[in-house]
Image (cartoon, rainbow, N blue to C red):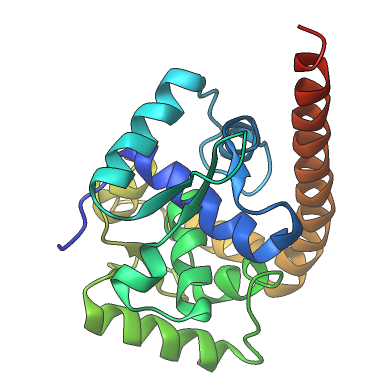
Length: 223
């Protein structure tokens, strides 16, 4: 692979990709806003508790790889991704990769629901076509199906694989009844309702992060 990233770098880059498309008014992100984005409790699997040191280390690694830029023209440092340009991908492809970086392996139905705020995919076939394009680029891999699993699952190919994704590849003795239950839980209508709630919480999280940052800057005026 052209880009091999650590788990922390993947979380930081995925957060930047997401916020660039979902809350452009708050983008680029300050360090505090980026930490909040990395650690938010929705649209993240697993949920993390990264601190300044972890995120700064990940940013250093991403900058060294030419995938992140730091704004130098503002008093408070802000960060933005340049991964899309370097990888030569569209906004729709970036939306899919961002979700895969933040949530691990996904089905086309899950990707369609969870990229709703970032890109428009009118049909599942549109998502599948985009995934096939990313596979040709070497950025995405289709995972082996578990017994009884109807939909294919896909993961990114940008670095370290989460433990739960490894288990997706290796758990071949899963009972068919359990697999059917898991597929049922991922039905599109349920995913749509969940996505609507996630959008609301994500927007509130972004607003809270910016309010915290503004208050921090206000406090600094009196120190």
